[in-house]
Amino acid sequence: CGFLLLAGLMTAFCCGVAPAQSSDATDARVEQLYGAAKAAQSQGDRTGAIGKYEELIRIAPSVAPAYNNLGMLYLDERDFPKAAEVLRKGLSLDPKMVSASALLGIALSEMGRYQESRDALQTALKANPQDQNAQLYLARDLVQLNDMNAAAAVLGPLAQQEPKNQEVWYLLGEAYMQLSEQALTRMSAIDPDSVLAHEVSGEMMEDMKNYQGALVEYKKAEAAAPNQAGTHYHLGNLYWKLSQWD
Image (tube, rainbow, N blue to C red):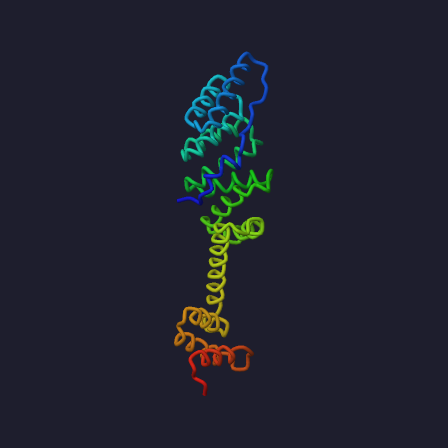
């Protein structure tokens, strides 16, 4: 279902990219088509704008910004395969077209091609590290690729920049939960009968209100390390919750 970013995409990449001046005979026609495309966009006529850009590309296939703008329109129409195809062509003409790299990454992410999307977005963010749309899509890709450390590294600063963005916090929470599970799995693999393994297991059960299960784990922790500070506290605190005062 995506992450509801595309609704604001046209604002984020507001006016697109204007075509560069050329010295050939098609220059006037290119400028005319570009103006007509922008006019159609401003009137909400994306179909008309797409047609103008397609015609512009037919008569001037080396005008790289036209591919960027056309790809942006396809993306707004949620035609992700066409968007990716057009944006790749534009980048083949001008690999330094940062907005096209970001748009390509978003299109690929929406298509579920997360590794390719990650590469495109990382390229875009090297040139424009403040692009928050690209950051959020990159974080989404990293979560899908199970690279939670990298995802958390992207989402932490983004959460500070957008403290009211629920989606950022959701992804950050998911990344931290996955990292926590991975850490606990590795800890248990080292020694499943260690005091730490039993304490953590008891804490998890206690959080889920499974007090009897937690009681068993805390007793095992106390037996494993009777002289270690903390083991008796866990057990005593749980007896308190169970009103077993004696």
